[in-house]
Image (cartoon, rainbow, N blue to C red; front, side):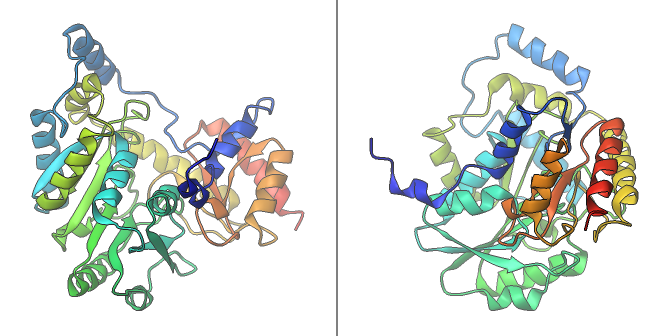
Length: 367
């Protein structure tokens, strides 16, 4: 059997490898999983059951049910003080990313990706023959905008942002967003702003680059805020020309986001999720305070990850040692061209976090 040569451009997810490894351990301390440790709100579950029994189980229109599209668009524009031309419902944020890349990038085209990055940006762009150009972030994961501009070539088509970030938990500052918007406008680039973690912002007021730059595709969804990871309801909102092309591709790929889940998302938008954020702020403080004396680490601004530098300087080796001690974390080279950090998820019960802190500090003391 001959496999397509494009498959040589991507690897199996390093995160999945850790998950598979975790199946072999007995009662592992799991700080690797990038999904909430709480369940879908009960009112959203009830809405799902009603939708199923009311027969809302067939295909919807490709772009998503109108009432959900309108409600999400109004919510984003109000909360983020921006104007969005059009919106579609996608099969999770991963669906939005793939559709946007397919619509915007030809083989050989370049996209600027901050490093560290979410794993899909690299592999999905390479899958279609595009070339990710990495912008190394500063030691505190801030942006050197001068470096960003120096990476732009005639082949550059877009800049990808992820704020709050997976894996670092860092949020772009207003000054960074304004500077990036100015550069994108200067060179006529699309900005893709992955805002799936916008419900988890702990100190500052959240800002989207769409507030400063209209040629932004805002992508988000319900997987993190409402623990609806398996329901596959995301959205992409931005320039109408791009959205129309993405809808065309969705017709022949995902077809539509799951119908019952779209109707349930109408209820999810009315849920108050601030208590989840407050709980995760406390978990963030628990793990940061627990490891900051033993690790070089920045306190996350948002999301539910912390990205410390690995003792000994090699993230993959430290992650291996952690596994030997029954602790699951992700080596930083899954999210970076460098192997210097590890990603730790604090989307876990407090007792798991406390056990993880004990193991992490014990391992750090060996260096």
